[in-house]
Length: 245
Image 1 (cartoon, one colour):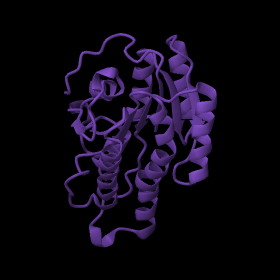
Image 2 (cartoon, helix red, strand yellow):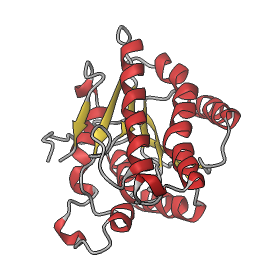
Image 3 (cartoon, one colour):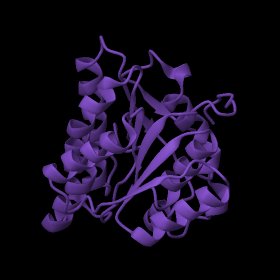
């Protein structure tokens, strides 16, 4: 695992947006960030899941989170622009963003990839990330030391048979991260990508249905890297693809 000594309240007073916050790694990141003092904004498409995370954060006595129900498959550029405007109006700052939401699609031979499935995966995993990042960059740039985190994969910089659309989409995530990091190199904004590795999530189970998830790392166990890149300790780390495991 990535080694980082998490100190209490290291994210105090930070406003952090997490996409895909209703389940898996996104949910755990939201809970972890909240436990460290952050005011988290939960973005996802399933309201009931977001409300469950909200309730858990409130029950633990952490700062009350905000909920942004948004289906990235159908959202347009203006939706993201309005969302960022609302965030800045309500909170006055945005310190960090974890772009975690994604869909797997189907694992299939390249020659048999369904065109609609390809478009759906690219819409959520690539186009939505592009539109979100565009809308978020001005707000993050306003803050000294803002952190933008993309989510990559083991197939995000080396293609693998049958992972077609998902693999290509993760390549684009790493490319966007590198481009933004290079363009903002001389600012306080840092942009990086996390490869979570094999983690016990519903998406992983869909990809490997016969795998024993008890042998995998839990979302909680990989949180040190997620906290590190949101904390002040990662100031100066820019344009990097880091492995959580």
